[in-house]
Length: 85
Length: 85
Image (cartoon, rainbow over all chains, first blue to last red; front, side, top):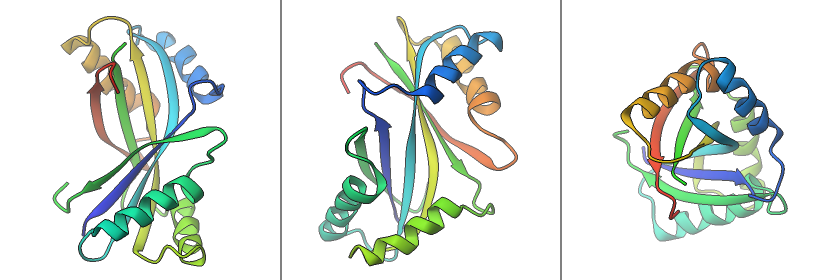
């Protein structure tokens, strides 16, 4: 069944304590290549049947209202993924 | 600066209470097109300079060891994103 993937990230100007914690932990584990980390969310919405333009519009609205907090988060992508993946 | 995006999702056989809560809330808000929701995580790792094969390998290892819990989660993608996005 096709899925719609919604990616949500904290806004750039918002402090991200989880990301900061990861950025502190990485070098202690030997991962020295990264200068910053931000942690966000990824949602997979399963759709029965075909993803129509209307369903995609529903997903975009759900992403903006239920899946993200528009005060502190941005919806960075709403993408359709076929069954195969 | 280029970023490496790491997507982590709960394994299919693992119960996902957050996803279940969202699937219950969607129809109450008028979003009736979705039969299932899974909630995972999305990490953005910032890289200073070019993303070499070695840095990508570091990101893959960090994804498998620090960013995900291999008992309950799968790393579904490790992707390089250019500055433009």
